[in-house]
Length: 286
Image (cartoon, rainbow, N blue to C red; front, side, top):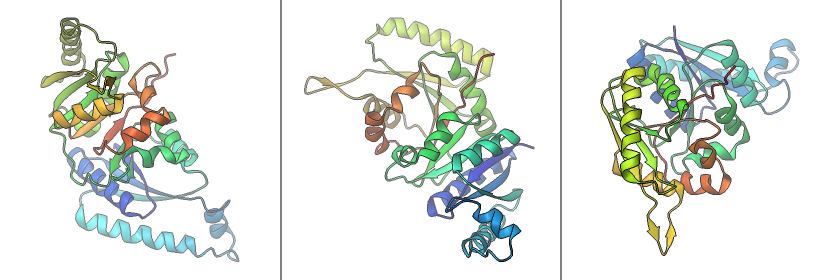
């Protein structure tokens, strides 16, 4: 049985991520693992379980909150199988350990819709999870409460990793959606040249991935006061213009993701990207 892993801290952001993930699981039959990581100080959860004299009040409080979470989840989504997990230590390391043990379809993480991706990248643990995990990460802003996949965007630079990203997203999205390939024309390539490349690329997606409802958009960098708009602004404009509901990003070292994680770019992008974003895992060639 396929699974989704949701790290939770019992905040409104993680609660929203749970509800969003449950909509995906309802549509696709996944079970859900909820993991709470104790990171206040070393071995707080382990010590509480092994040493009766060490009664950290935060441990039973977290266990009660987890029980309440599973109770409302089972009432709202009765068909979903749920498991509660507790770990102690660094969030990124514990997620890495869990995903190494279990082939999850994705790690689903909540973030503040007001600050978008900035909330993800400020915390080094979450940043490391997205950048280095071998499991795809789905970041869900608080403002995204309904799982919608009518229009799925893929940042496109004609790289092999993009085909892999679509395959990785299939357990969440299936094949019944309109795929929009979004290319920011950073190098001012000729449009007819890009059109020809898109035609070849779409043929590969149709043949190798099995999708058929595909369109593309070539976004130039608009000039403002004789300066080109930033990459994040260009992406955001394309997402708005195309009414994208769900975004897929690859993490190939040579693609657009590396530009997005530069601090000066992320801060600008953070306040405008407010849609669920699927970060595909990096595939290591042997």
